[in-house]
Length: 173
Image (cartoon, rainbow, N blue to C red; front, side, top):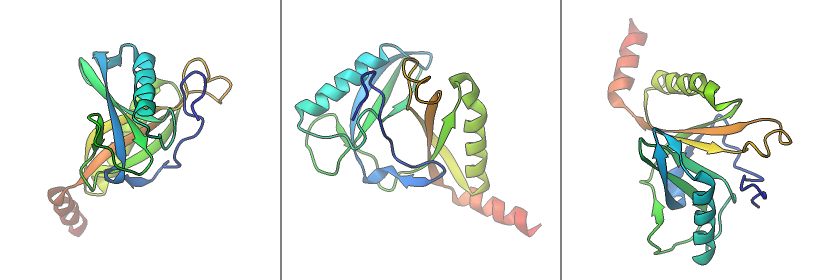
């Protein structure tokens, strides 16, 4: 269930885990951006929620979306319950599409350190970080009553044979 403000009332327990997003059916919604800052984000979320209802589909965790930013445009993905739909905004990521998730509690301007730590962990495991997604679990309206700002950081990663070979070589020395 989505809260009145549009935030998810619940979300997946992915904190500190590697997950395969390639198994999921997603609804894709474009979002205008200006230097990675969304413009009209709530309106895009509402439009996406209405599109999903019109298609007769259900979100796995209503209000839980993955936001991928860009310079002038971005995307938000809502994870749908298992099924198949030929609709134009329904996509599936390549399978496997491995990602690591971390729950971040704090203000958005402090998130950089957590993202860098996650990236270093991936490099240390021989995995190359790729796309970055953020899932805002609380908004400015509900954050105080829900224990502060919470954001789930989700980083797509790819196994890198070159990185793994380099790490193995370093361990031998």
